[in-house]
Length: 156
Image (cartoon, rainbow, N blue to C red; front, side, top):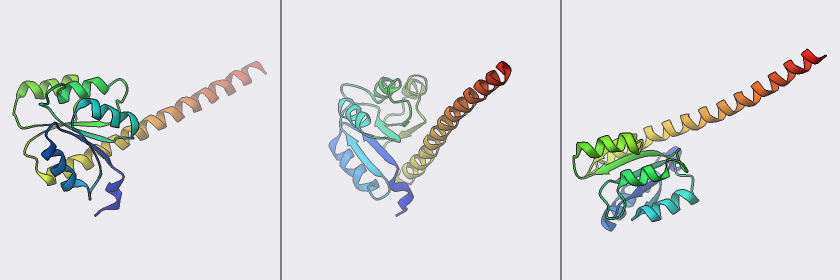
């Protein structure tokens, strides 16, 4: 087990209980796993935890994976989104990319090695975006200080 991966908070959403159990069993040693059987439950988990990567099944009864991703874009744009489906539906892929800003599209049944690789890569993207946002914020503060100092020297 790589302790470095333990810090990756991974949310898996699927309406089929046996898929949730199998997923958690397969990846609990690799990542910190959160599971949800609906978009409502997933939203609660995202609201209450620092989730880095979200894998969602596309075909669920009330809310599709794409609809869930789209619903959290405004409030939780940071998590990297991966859509999983047992159906190879090109329209779902296009929707996922356009509406839900999906990073990857995977088919079921999943390949455990692919999941591990994609989650680790998605986490790297997550961390790079977070670092970029922090650096941009620091740059804005530094620019503000420079502008203040420039104004002060013009006044004296």
